[in-house]
Image 1: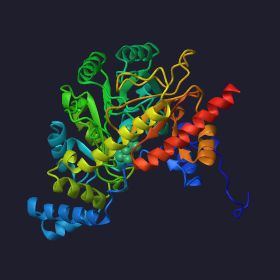
Image 2: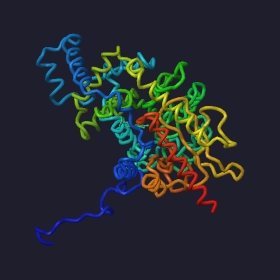
Image 3: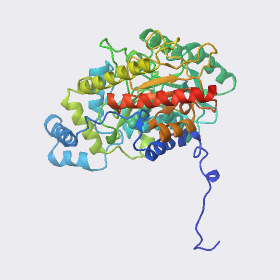
Image 4: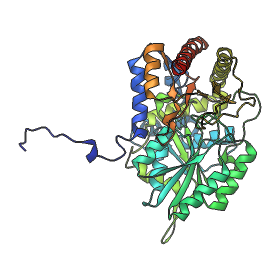
Length: 459
Ligand SMILES: Cc1ncc(COP(=O)(O)O)c(C=O)c1O
């Protein structure tokens, strides 16, 4: 081969995760929406853009800068360095995150146990990278699950074993059975990943009693829980929110994953992980899991942009470190949209005999079609961004393509959230980045697609 000849690589020579559906999924979904820019998108789980405000970003930065000088006593050059120089691997807003967790969630954490990351996505990657010590390790994850988790697991060669979710959010009998099955096969289940609040994509939440039972089971089976909570603040009723698993955790069983994408700004790309687990070594204790994660982070992203952290820090400071207080407008917009979407589905599919009569009791999107129940069904979540619509035919990427091209509406096939190739008769609708008017147009188009599809299949 001459020096001038171009080098061509093949995917087969790269990491096996490249080309895996878990990694190509997000690109495919983005690409469909880019190809159909005028389609109404009930697909994107992005936050509402109406409240984005460039001027507020400058103000947050100034607020955090003043905090460094006035509250923490930094000299001007120190404050400037902290904001603009390479910085502490674990981050510079860890103390405010700890305060936020105390104020909003009743969680007491040592700020040293917090690692500020480039989005929650990096936090997941760091944790999975640390936990995957060898080929016998597996991760359990409640199915359907967030595709970003499955993709991150693929990148560190960690197989993901599904655990049934069901109407309670996690089927504890199945979780116990999967742990035992894995161990009987000589494998080591390292943790179980789950989203106890308004899960993506199912919308299901776990009630408080079941959370406690889950923690008991985790203790009994000596299992870590990875709690991912990007949507917990967006409950649509006015009652109290259930405590997070981390708030109930007395045995350091829970690694808590946080994101500011939905509660502050996705463009800042800031998330975090609370990892207070003690880590021992041959000579005794070597620190905490947070310390180990920081070591990995130092070789992945070095540190999270301090400018981006300052924007998050400033927003926290301006609301007494309460994201509940900072998100009153957002919460009511999401609640309005969720109710509008559910009412809109009820109006457009009025004669369905099998409507879920209890809110928050979603149908299993993967359950086989019941011959007596050919209708269209949907979940009624108590908050969050997502509603799952079950239809009597398989929903795949080709149907999404047709929906975008011929009907002008985008949604997400639920098949993307299952780690197998079995057909799934369900799709996910997101209410977060649309107006009620767009929801109306989107649902009219979706109803037309479903009606035409049913007619076509009947003929
Ligand atoms: C359940 C879940 N976890 C994590 C993330 C990623 O969060 P971030 O944008 O902070 O990386 C998302 C984003 O949609 C999500 O739905």
